[in-house]
Amino acid sequence: MAKSSKIGHCHLCGSYGKLSFEHVPPESAFNNQKVVTPDAKKVFELTNLDDLRILSGKQSQRGKGGYTLCERCNNLTGHWYGSNYAAWAFQGAAYLVRSNGMLQLAYPYHLLPLRVIKQIVCMFFSINSPRFREAHPALERFVLNKEAKYLPPDIQIYAGYLLSDRSRAAGITGSLQLDESSGVSHLRTYSEISFRPFSYILSIKSPPPEHPLLDISFFAQYGYDDFTTLQLPIPVLSVYTPFPGDFRSREAVLRESGGRNLSLKKHLQSD
Image 1 (cartoon, helix red, strand yellow):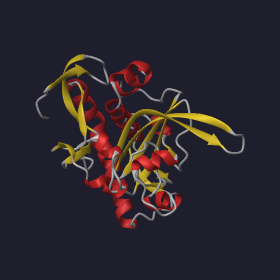
Image 2 (cartoon, rainbow, N blue to C red; image 1 turned 135 degrees about the vertical axis):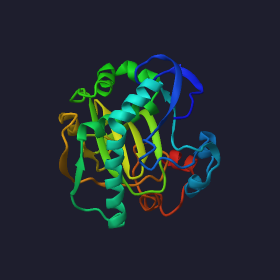
Image 3 (cartoon, helix red, strand yellow; image 1 turned 180 degrees about the horizontal axis):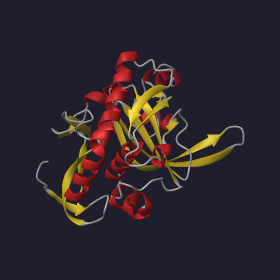
């Protein structure tokens, strides 16, 4: 682990001091290459959404992540959950490659479900601000006690295969979605992490975005040492726009915009 060079509050336990670099997802889960995080202003000024992948920005030589966890939390969660998450990710990547993205069945996963979902939740702590911890103390206890089972009742975790060369992460956000049959708008509150081979949504007191996603919250019902095989019908998603919770493919975005590859400004205006 590289020497800490940041000071602040740990996003997981809240302690104040030196922070270590937390990979999101873990470095062993395909997250060990240089990444570029485009400047938000440059993203907004795009004239063609296809150019999102070639934007310049802040570079990280070690992969996606940030100085978010104290060394103790980083070491503990990495030791407890990291390798099990990597095994889960390798299985997902293998299915994507072998099927060329044409996944239509439930496929078997050999895993320790509780360890996998605890690593996913830890990742959500990292991408959100330290205030996320203050709002969800039960979720903090769930991660920091490796034997603890069950998510808080207001939290659900959803997953999908990510068939895209783009990644995306967003802290807690909200969207109003109209029920056309009733004319009533519903607020959905969620956070997102998308990094191949998976996309995840952490939903708070609301349904996930209106896309096909598999609820994997039941992973939290297993014990820490419960190794099992699960047949999981995980849907295939795509990331094209920078909008959290938008899993439309490039083709779907172009089709809905009348065949024009909209700039981000025009896309926002059209919404």
